[in-house]
Length: 126
Image (cartoon, rainbow, N blue to C red; front, top):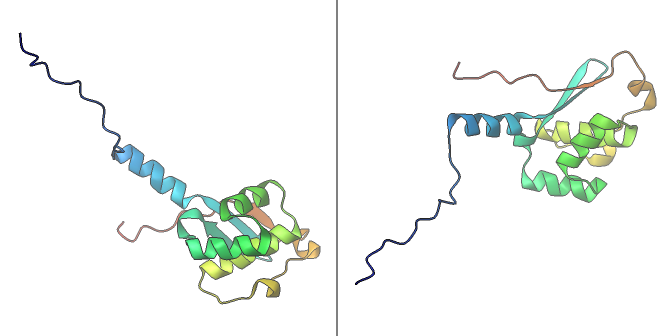
């Protein structure tokens, strides 16, 4: 008797790409935080952050972008808010220095202050 049996096939380790998994990925990249100070919005979305900007943020505050977003959403204080505003302005393309951005308790306690989620970006293909 010869051994003509086929070897068992193993499941593929490649990620399946389905419309549902793609939608989840896009939603994760679009997640973030919006801070409003004196009527001006500062948005940070995970998908917009570059590795270079993440390293620069970490060198200033010792936190990565995801940690900063999470901690700012849970316990906003002027140091985290200042770092968040700096990051949002850098994402807008402004070449602002880290130490030039400050948020005060007066701004934080004003009626024009809010922490929430960024609005959905307009879909240019829609």
